[in-house]
Amino acid sequence: MKSKTGSGSASRRKAEATLIIAGLLFTAALDAVSGTAPPPTRPSVRAFEATYLASVEQVPPGTGRLEVWVPLPSDMPAQQVRSIRIESPYPWSVRRERENGNSYLYLAATQPPAGRLDVRVSFEAERREVLRSGLASRATARPEDLARYLKAEQLVTLSPRVRDLARRITWGERTPEGKARAIYEWLVNTMVYDKTTPGWGLGDTERACDVQKGNCTDFHSVFISLARAEGIPARFVIGFPLKKEPAGMIPGYHCWAEFHLDGVGWVPVDASDASKTMDAARREYLFGNLDPDRIQFTVGRDIRLDPPPCAEPLNYFIYPHAEADGKPLTPVSIQLEYRDRPGGGTAAAGAR
Image (tube, rainbow, N blue to C red; front, top):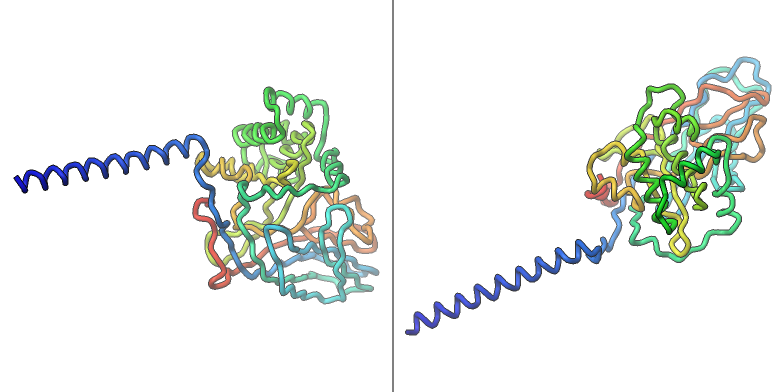
């Protein structure tokens, strides 16, 4: 009898444990469906040191006055930059562009020697993952900033075609975030990341709407145009991507966009990266979240520098801008060499 009683108690305990586990699994499933699962509590961080090389390929012989403007990375909520070191053959000063707050070097030389000009900017940086769940800062942008990021720019247009397309894409959406998501999903599923069709890389909304192809600049110009057409402030952000490897050389830039929500602040989107994958989780992540595998340099389009160059405002500002006797110098080139700092954190595993 004792053995039967013990066996029955064990069976009941086993059944109760099974019910408890089942209940926990059911509760977790409900949380996942309802969206109440707790968000990550700590963003991933990547700490690294880097050198940005800005090059003017050929200063012409007989140049009387050479001027060069070089963009700089700077502090912002998602990144801290420190220990900046400049290597330049000429004296320089740090200046700040007025409309968007971008920092840059300005250097000038009289009767410089002909040939290649290199400027190196070395720095240490810490880049934090941006999580949508952590953006509720209730920060309010200045009214003049929001007004600026609602206007058309030279290549970021608000033509009748753009306005009509924005209305059709966002039809039925009632909130700014819902409209921004509809624009993002349309872009990710419609445009093709392509750097072979002529005209790519200028960030020309009209051209991108014509061919529905382009690089990150083109993707995000369309996003910004469509968002602004629906009354949502949106802005252009540019810098460099970082590879998964702990060290490497990056030969070109990467850009993304941000749109503004009242009571939340600037919300990031990376539609071009999302278009490169069929991973639904990755696509979802890149609306409102950003991995730390990047470094931001500047914000905005139609950049006006001080002292003003004789050329038109810069389409965007990641390359150096150079002028010889008031005339723009080309070609120019850029690259970023980086190395992770030991113990400086790792990139988000789920953000890859």
